[in-house]
Image: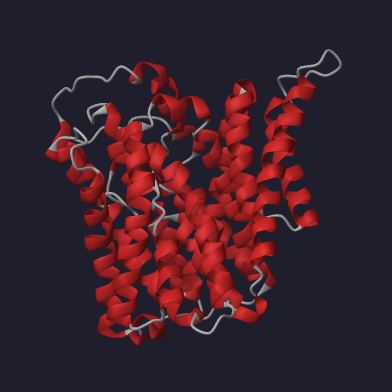
Length: 423
């Protein structure tokens, strides 16, 4: 524990010192943490002794994903979804299941995994993360509808993919342990807690008896999140759906609370994400990377170059997107933090093919981080000319400016600022 804390503090300091450089170049601080974990892990130097079954690993993964889904939910309140749903609806309604299915087909026929395990991998790798496309979604010269599409899609698909991950993981654990009624109850309880707790807290603050001071206002959402987490654990509700539902509820009914929590919440989520990336890197070993064979590497490449592009191409037929816009959406389906934690959950579950699934997921995520975080500036240069602003953009522009994330590891204060590519 002490060694891990020292390692994280040292790498965090290095990431902070390099954050300005990372903000201007293809360097990503996510890569810094990933590589640091790999070098410090058992497979290389052995300084970090991390095991998949360790309570620290499972606890960190759970807490980090809870925080990320909570803050993700706050980015996509119902107002934003109603105002700009046409294109994100295609990406989520068609693109997400198609990506899941194509990825599952590759895992089954190329790697030879069973259908349940293949579908589980598809669900894990279906979500996207905009932090590795920061120059694209944070550049004013990129069409507003494209930036809003990527921002809304990535903010919602983590939560939409979660029930599939939970279901396929339960099926993979064995029919004797599978109780669909209990699983459905767990998901439903999580959603109810995620909606009821923040709504009640926000309504309570609007009464004459209560009013949060400016100093304590950011802690309002923190208290709501902690209460949702505690009640979820006490009732065995699904913590992750509860977190996502709670974030959306706060964004919908508590605009002031949402804004006051944003800076502090982003910092907390960022620290937990980077810690999980360090642990994730430490679990990747040279033996694992070499053991997947050429079929495993081919699967990872197909998951990035075929699954997402084909799914997006089908989803956006006759959508009105230009060729450059559609190409950008097809390419920028980076596998981000949600996939990292879903992979950790599978590894910790101990199912029959947990190691194989984790290895395939790990290789795909590593390739995605390297590829997408180093090409966002290049693709952003495609959109140097001015574009017509859609009618809905005026209603959500302020929200987009506050919610577009910078590169992984950048400070929360930098989030929402435009990263203009060099001339």
